[in-house]
Length: 265
Image (tube, rainbow, N blue to C red):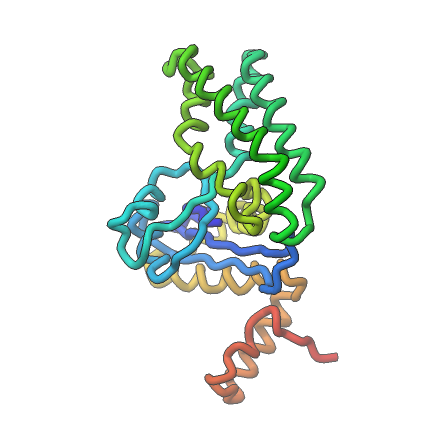
């Protein structure tokens, strides 16, 4: 999951990139990386992701569009997975405000898809994928037909029309979870990993220049990765700095990563 602007500094933004495989039993530990950029333009994400080829779960921020193009710098076009929670939120906003029956119908259809995800949560990708293809895919296809019909009926300038158009624009990426058992239906779990820095924006304001922003990103990456791996950040930072000062060999840097930390008695 990639999210821009999680921490605002005086001169730019911290972008957050998080990975969490625990929901499907992956072997890799969860981690969060914050990188500093002077703005929110998609070019910064393109630069940071140089060399990455794979699937990226993102929200609807238009700056990411360049990542999916054949002309993408630094690698092949990235496959994107869009978030069903964001799609659901759009309809919920309309329903809460206007009581729209069309929005209510969309929410009921999405709830059916989520009910299947609830049943298969925690299973392996090899178990999730066939369940999604057999049970979720028909519901998603039916939702797509319903969405297309509503977009033709409702003015794109209306509040509901705008929300439906948002879902329609991201339709391909909303189907990615049907073809890859590792992909989540939404980005909620990963957003929970990057949310602490969004709630802590005032602490980032001390970064009055680019070097300060970069330093804050590195510190935030270590602290938040410690927290999601059940490691006490102060104990980790103290022990790691002491190890470096004592001449810890550079070819064993992996020993100092948060998920490998073993506190002394």
